[in-house]
Every structure is written in structure tokens, then in C-alpha cells.
Length: 254
Image 1 (cartoon, rainbow, N blue to C red):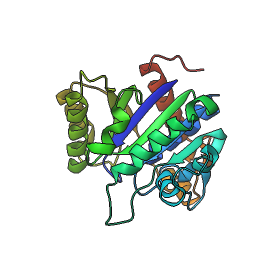
Image 2 (image 1 turned 90 degrees about the horizontal axis):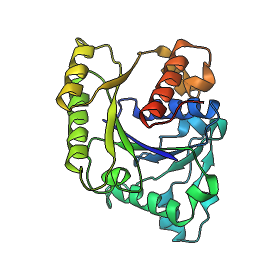
Image 3 (image 1 turned 135 degrees about the horizontal axis):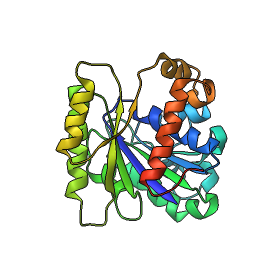
């Protein structure tokens, strides 16, 4: 089982990227689980198309421990197993609690033994990497961390902070940095700025995703590009990224 945590600034296209890679891997015959670690609980919407799914934190809040593994899971495109951690009531509690609760409950209820995923994605809001938001990096969870960024200054700043957090956890058995994914916004000197970031954090840009209107069109349909426009060049970019992630994690793509 490969376990991958994907971090990035809010709004950078991280969830879109992860969902499309999940869909691409499912097409390739892999069993995929995607765990949304964002209080907004919208990581997996383009995989299952539902407006709202009950989050793990909502289940814990309303049912204590009287719920099943099936209650936590929604099946998405290609059989992708979708889980949303959720967050606290706005203005109350810590957003990281949802992540901690989700990961603990998934393990407690035997999710990995029951579903036997080949690949697990933790889709994590990366503006702040502390407390519960760092949990997917910890030993026993992700093996590799990938950072999604554009060439925009705030996105690069967030990416650098994430990389610093990964470096700071080195030696504790936490996940290691696997690389940077450029999700283009077509800003000035974008390639050069992201390449400089990668050099500064002693990593590399493993993929560059085009800025495409098809991404927004697919999202309006509550679908991934892989599902909505399977023959498009953008869908092929996501498929190539899926293969790259597998290769970096030591697996030859099917």
C-alpha cells in the first residue's frame, strides 16, 4: 500500500489535482482511497458528485462511536473510496481535530484491512502545517509528501513553509518530501520561480500541469477531467502525473 500526502495553499487546485490522479489510478486498475483533510469537506466532491457527505467529525459529534465504516465512506468514480474528515462548528474548536479523528477512526474500524487500497491519498490544506494538519506526515500514515503550487508568491511561500515542516520532522520517522507539482496560473516567470523554489528546498518539479478551461468545466459538472473529458490533453496530463507519483514511490505503473 502506497500512502501519499498532498499539501498546498488553499485554492491552489490541490484537491482537483488529487481527485484527477485518483480517477486516473482507478482507470489503471488500482484501488484508491482519498481522504479529504480540509474542514470545508470538498476534497472528493468531483469524484462522487454529491453536494454534501457526512464527515467523520460530524459522525463523531452526533453518534459518538455508534457508526460503521460504511457511514464514513462514499464510493466515487472508478470505485475510489472517498472520506471527508470535516471540521468543527465554525468559530468553535480546532480544525485539525477533524483530521485526527478521521485517521484514528479509519484505523480503529479497520478501513485499510477491509478495503485493501493500493494507494491512499491524504489531501491536506497546507497553509498551516501544525497539530492535526501535520498528522498525515507522521509515521504510519503517508510515506511521501508532495506539494502543489503555482508561480504566485503566496502559493510559493506556503509551499516553502510546507517543505520546511517536512524537513523539521526529519528523523522522527515522518514522511519525506517527494517533489513539487506545478499547477499553472500562467503568471510571469512561473517556471523559473517554481524551479527556484524546488532548488531552495532541495527538491524537484516532478510535473507541470497546464491551465485549462476543461478543469473548470468538469468541476461545474461535479466531475473530474478524467471522467468528463477522458480523451483530452488535460486528462492525459493527470494520467502522466499518476504514473510519475507511482514511480517516485517505487512502483511500476500497470
